[in-house]
Image (cartoon, rainbow, N blue to C red; front, top):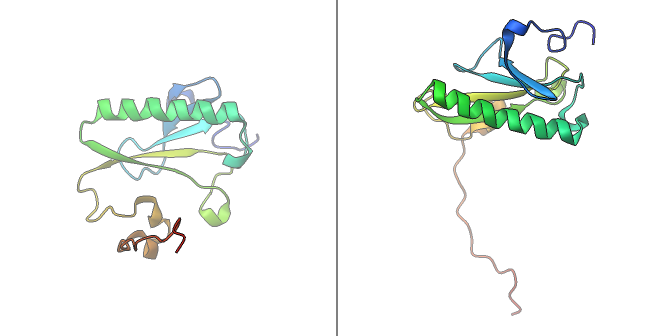
Length: 138
């Protein structure tokens, strides 16, 4: 695809390459080792990927998670995300999955994780569970 940042990339940016995808660092990282998993085929939406591409991306995601944990023992969690569509924050219309390493104390309260895409929804108070009457035949 002409003028696509992820189709026309410099091999120096490559971390790892799979059959149908590759990984590279995010140009605007949220945290150290923030990694992108990108299919080789130009497709805008995650939901338009073929199953074999999703499987290869998952393998790469798992491999990069292990690598990052080896590179930095302070990594204690991860956020994984895909933006699909302009209204969801997608700014490069070539599918890419974010693998964002997290460390204890990197923010005051990590509760809500990916829910932070809408800041007012990130933190919440867990509802208590009421007893269920399902299955009863009173």
